[in-house]
Length: 416
Ligand SMILES: [Zn+2]
Image 1: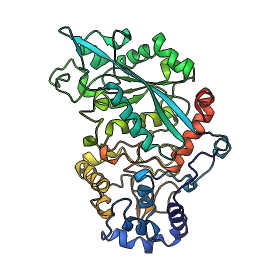
Image 2 (image 1 turned 180 degrees about the horizontal axis):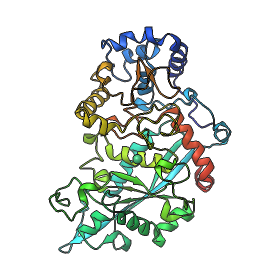
Image 3 (image 1 turned 45 degrees about the horizontal axis):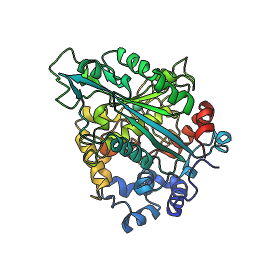
Image 4 (image 1 turned 120 degrees about the vertical axis):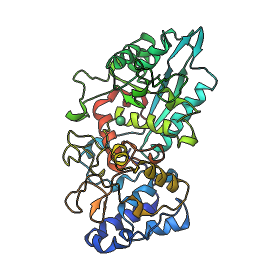
């Protein structure tokens, strides 16, 4: 079975080949895009179809539309096939997932409260991830959401402080030690080592004032990551610090963390937040299955380091870059507008070219005019919730290579 979905929309395939053909005259043909006249019509509209069929349409626009509205990733567009031998043997994979919702007691009351359905919340995260992974031949399946501290005593932490600290945070490495210990609990470890289940540990809030008092200097709560991958396998580059002891059998090195805010249907696990919780979960799954950040490298804009993926352009950490320039809200607004059919102008993305890579100077990236546009919609970047939209064909290839190479037991247990 081939890696990518077979029934790729014919229109997209045509557009991609046209884009390749027109690269020689890119400078002339991209002029109308650089002039700021172009707006992006709603995905799925007749105008969008017309746009995708046009020879003048830049590759990044085709890419942006290609995975929107459940269009599968078109792996025929991948720029290299260095891992083709592995891909030939890859089978569609369904990764089983168990969420572990950590809790604590304050004044005898079990918190966070179970005033929403944890099973539904977990299902929503999985559903969003599956949509983002459409056409990748990788899907996720919810097995269980554990939140009952009587049935699963390891879920109960001694205090609010412990619940906030047993997280990936930028203050202390004790948080990761705590998460590793939980992942090693017999009933958690059995899931990963015997059933090849993906364990997701959920704790900590940086946004809910009930739990996070940012004026409390002893709390780590305002330093909690949205998510984190405890799996740091050999697919990571040196700058991403792979673990020398990682193996597929190590339960303490095969888990994900997401914050409680990401699972909370009243916060990021909702349409109101563009399903940012599900996107965060999907982003961490990307790390778990073989992907690095698009900005991964020791040096910003490192052309050779970065994420080792041919079709993601080098970029600085996008949210920080935009924030420093005062453009973060504009970026979020652009993505929101695109997703609601508001026809944002392509020219409004001019500020998001963080690496100033010149056209023709690299085989790495979507080229549009003089400099390369950041991959602002990429699942493995740091972008506002509204911008998490897609994986590129080469990212999908890389995941298949990493899974086939490093997770043979996962493949044996859960490949179709
Ligand atoms: Zn990440």
